[in-house]
Length: 275
Ligand code: KIV
Image (tube, rainbow, N blue to C red; front, side):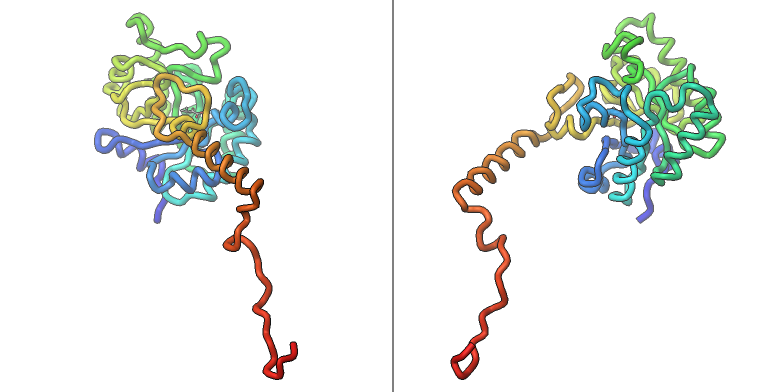
């Protein structure tokens, strides 16, 4: 089976909605690979797996380690890896060195960068250097300390132009798709209709060309569930119930039972009746 490429994702625009989820580990990648078009090794792993307050502490080494697991445990979906804060803003050369390192060490299909017009030159340089790039505009978690925090974008029409210009800049720089995060439906619809590349929404309405969620959010494994998250499973409860049962069975010695213990070879008795 051939793994989906960034070009395959791009060609889905206007045809079939693009199904995306985050994956940070091999077990999750194995479980979702066959059912999604794209898996994002997002820097949200800092908050979800490491309990950081935001994504700013995430390192390139963490991203590479998790991306290797995800690529290794999958064979169908396109795998895109987030460049963490501080690894691409300083110069295009530094961005290229770090992005090339991620591509070489993980064998992923492409890279995601946060930002619009401000980092268009970097996106252009990377795409011209043969690295497929996914953009990310609207609410940018790496800028929450300076850009209004986790607030929905585009509530007033006077704000729209900035986000439209960001999305166009990302497209013109050569990105194969762009994440639209935390914005009103009319703004997401407007950007989606203007762009030739697919838009992938998170908290940005069904008007986008595809959707992405943090897998742990939709499985019910995280405490904070923003309005845009639909919880498809209560895995936290399922885990608690299972561990509760295990604990009771260990305490009353019902586990391990005969099904889960090793026996010696069957006892062989000689015909003369002696062992
Ligand atoms: O880091 C991440 O998981 C993301 C998605 C939420 C789009 O950027």
